[in-house]
Amino acid sequence: MLKIISVVGARPNFMKIAPIVAVMDRYPMAIDHLLVHTGQHYDEKMSRAFFHALRLPKPDIDLGVGSGSHAEQTGRIMIEFEKVCLRERPDLVLVVGDVNSTMACAITAKKLGIKVAHVEAGLRSRDMAMPEEINRLCTDVLCDFLFTTDRFANENLQNEGVPADKIFFVGNVMIDTLLRHKEAAKKLSLRRELGLKPKQYATLTLHRPSNVDDKQTLEGILQALTAIAKELPIVFPMHPRTKSRVEGFGLGGYLNFGQEVRGIWCTEPLGYLELLHLNMEARMVLTDSGGLQEEATVLGVPCITLRHNTERPITCTEGTNRIVGNAPQSIVSAARAVAVQPPRKARIPEKWDGRAAERIVRILLDRLGKASSSSCA
Ligand code: UD1
Image (cartoon, rainbow, N blue to C red; front, side):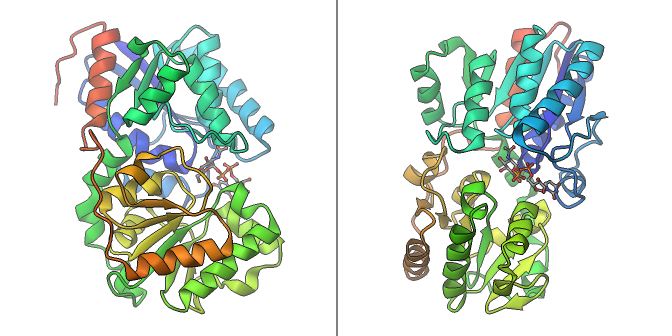
């Protein structure tokens, strides 16, 4: 049996691990799998709701580390995860994405001599002010299996000197999940309940420290949103970090939770299916998230990214994404331009076909499998 521990910690990890767990479950004679949740995200709406919607099994082990500074959170995860690795002695630790849990568990496992696989390797924003960029670099340099989503990621890893036999271009597990749940999301009624018509509203997500941790920047963005919302209503499910900053900076006058104010519907964080449902029929998606840039590309919905860079350039070269920064005037101009233009035709990037998880598990079984790996599904 090949013993694998896979790790999740924060919201975007859940969509990435779900299809991999589903495929691993087809090989009960070959893979002994444990799912570890670090507890980086813990609110019902940031964590458990996603397990339910994505049909993920309850984590086998919950480290319960919670929030803290980067060092506190990373350190607590490492201390707790080391105990798990020493007790369980896995053959492989599999981490996804670029959150603190990803890096903390990769370092811990590697120092114990355990092989590590990174799903979504090789993405680079070249912006060292992003904690995720540090997490990506530290994780990739350690890993034995680097599973990539596109050719830019392969090039980044090759340029950093990663041996070619460690890099596996498998596609995008986030898109596996999207394709699996698209039909169910389409059937929801939330858009109608909010009184919104197809293609006549925008969705917004905002949580990057570079956008929300500085009062002036955040207020500028809220002013831009207020201007856009005069012409196009915006649904804004608010991340807890953003909520605490809006309240702390005294900017609550721009928004009202659970109600529409001047064209902006501000809600609690939405579930996976609910946000997918709204994004599918939106006129545009405004975001600073990484995953949403990819999802919008596959949905063919224009995406305006409120950042100065992206680690996912394929969403611009082949997809629907535009990088506009966070200056209020740039955001408003980009939204106005997108609102009057016919949507740009997007190409679905290579291997974003719903089968990335299958490729990952197949590669792991081929390279590390100890017993019969024939599917028992
Ligand atoms: C983290 C990831 C980021 C990812 C994002 C997705 C890192 C460095 N950042 O950012 O890459 O895009 O998750 O959501 O790993 N909080 C709650 N409830 C929760 C979780 C967090 O209230 O369930 C609040 C706490 O006040 C916490 C703050 O949000 O301090 C930030 O949480 P944290 O996990 O540190 O970073 P995120 O901003 O969520």
